[in-house]
Amino acid sequence: MDITAKLAVVTGAGSGIGRALAVSLAQHGARGVVCTDLNAENAEATAALLGDVATAAQLDVADESAIEQLVQSVEAEQGGIDLFVSNAGYGQRGGLDLPTEDWQRMMNVHTWSHLAAARAVLPGMVERGGGYFLNTASAAGLLTQMDSGPYAVSKHAAVAFAEWLLINYADQGIGVSVLCPQAVRTNILGPNALKAGSANTRQAAGDGILEPEFVAEACVEAVREERFLVLPHPEVETYFQRKANDYDRWLLGMRRFRQRLMGD
Image 1 (cartoon, helix red, strand yellow):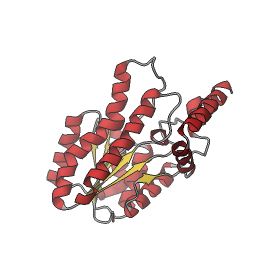
Image 2 (cartoon, rainbow, N blue to C red):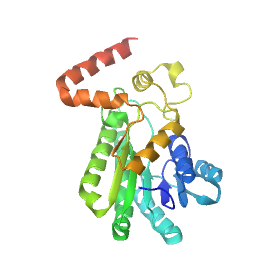
Image 3 (spheres, rainbow, N blue to C red):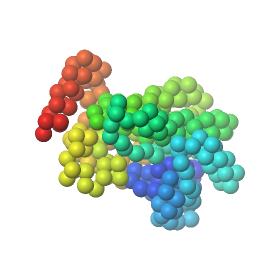
C-alpha cells in the first residue's frame, strides 16, 4: 500500500515505536496522522513534532467503546481511515502468580484492542475498496517470553488474530502486517534494563537492541510491499523456522536457554 495521501491512526504514539511510526508515516507523505496514547500529553507532543499533518487524542486501547468513538470522530472530521496502526503495549513480569485480572488486562491491550480496531474500521475500509492494518505483536508472539506468561500468550494471540484477519479479508482489499521485533529501545525495555540484567532483557536483547526509528522504517517498507511478517531482527525468522521444523527440540533448547539466563 502506498502511504502517500493516506489517513493513519497510530495507537501508543506517545513514545517509542509508536512515535517513530507516526513520524515516519508523516515523512512518507500521509495526509493525516492521528496520534493516540493513554497519556494525552505524550500524544500531543508527538503530534506537535509532525505539525499540521497530525492531530492528537487520548485513548485507552483496553476500552473497546473508546476505540469505536475515536474511529467515528476521526472519520467524521477527516474522512475514511486508510491505515490503522494498533501499536500500544506494555510489559509485566510474572506468570501463575499474577491474578487473572493482570492476564486479562494484557489480553485487552495486546489482543482485544486489535479486534476492537478491526470491528470499528474494517467495514468502512471494505466499503471504500481497501485499507490496511499494522499490528504490533512481538517476537514473543512467534517464540515465547520466558518471564512473562501473559505477555507471551497475548502476543501469540495477536499474531493469530492478524493471520485470521488477512486470510478472511484480503480478497476484499484489506492488507495486514504484524510487527514481531525482539528488543527495541522503548519504555517497555526501560533505560536501566541492561544494568538490571533481568532474564527478560537478556532474552530479548541477545540479538541487539534496535532503535525505534529503524523499526518504524522496516514497518513502512513491509506495508508498501504488503508483507505479513515484519522482522526487524532477522534472527527471529531462523528461530521460528527451527521451532516449526522440530518443536520438541526447540522447547528443549528454550528450557536450556532459560536455565542459562536464570543461572547467570
